[in-house]
Amino acid sequence: MTASWSQHFTAYVGIDWADIKHDICLPAGGDNHRQFDCIPHQVDRIDEWAKALHLRFGGPIAVALELAKGPIVSALLKYDFFVLFPINPSTLAKYRVAFKPSRANDDPTDAELALDLLLRHPERFTALRPQSVAMRSLLSLIEQRWDLVNDKTRFTNRLCNTLKQYYPHALDWFEQRDTQLFCDFLTRWATLLSAKRARKTTLEAFFYAHNGRRATLIEARLASIRSASALTEDGGIIEPCRLHVLALVTQLRTVLTVIDRFDKEIEWVASALPDYALFRSLPGAGPHLAPRLLAAFGEQRERFHGADELQKYSGIAPVTERSGKKSWVHWRWQCPTFLRQTFVEWAGQTINKSFWAGAYYRQQRAKGSTYQGCRTRTRV
Image (cartoon, rainbow, N blue to C red):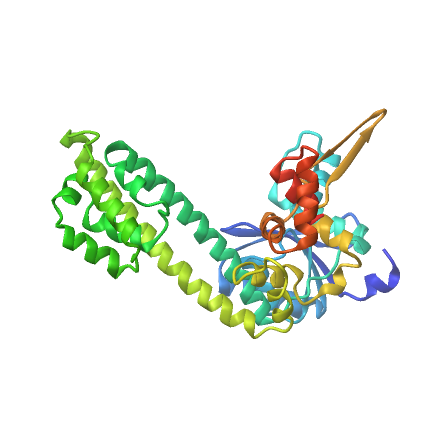
């Protein structure tokens, strides 16, 4: 640790965070003496602790913790005398194992280890510099939308599985199941018997009201409904499954509505940010991927000194391990999953939008590579 770096801060703090409480470690006196404390995750108690620390040491105060975002990070960022240094959880875990082969995990000890890492290797860690409110809002929106899409997939899969138990015909009538059309149909006709009892004019009006104006498709559906035979007539199966389907439809419809709201908010926030037009013009970057790519690069692009650093950070660069005469290349395991998925999905979209990406994809497929492997090489 250089003298200039050590003189820059009036105090150093290590924090091990949790949902209910946070363990604190501070240097006390000599180099090997530590002071431990514990504060509950309550706004007034965190504020009381922060102000007492500032009154005691002044500022700025260096804080080492495992998170780059989260409740405790948000709570500490509002104090201008704190400088936060995020430490990768895997780095802290390996540091712990180096001194505790038993792998014993203890919160106060983790707070001390985080502090020790920052004191001994300050050059390895970069202070957290929050991006603009708009960029942080965009990042939160697209991550939360991703969670909602996963919920949509989960509800759709459960819905399809339940329909297979008593009403598989509905799956044949609709290729796309994660739609308001599918939800509305099942809400009105949750059993085969109810669908067969519906009038032809009623069904036609329903499909026309949902912009289903292809006469051949409507007629095929109506014919299939008329000729369909029940998988089972057991009321002990049909009625419970019907109720389950209606419950899942309610959940799926809600998620679809919320995703649509998120899409509008994401478009509004992203369009106001600089360079959005640049990312929107990239091949394959539509209204969903362009905001994700913009958030992936962020505003502080100087933190990446080259394309290879971004590839390694996002997890799209492969890792080569060598031991003696053996070597193998594998997927990068430690990386931001959502960030990597963004580049993976974008690579897949560029195949039909970019001449170079398409040519490279076809070349790799001709060599026998799998679809996933081709996308991996395309993004690298």
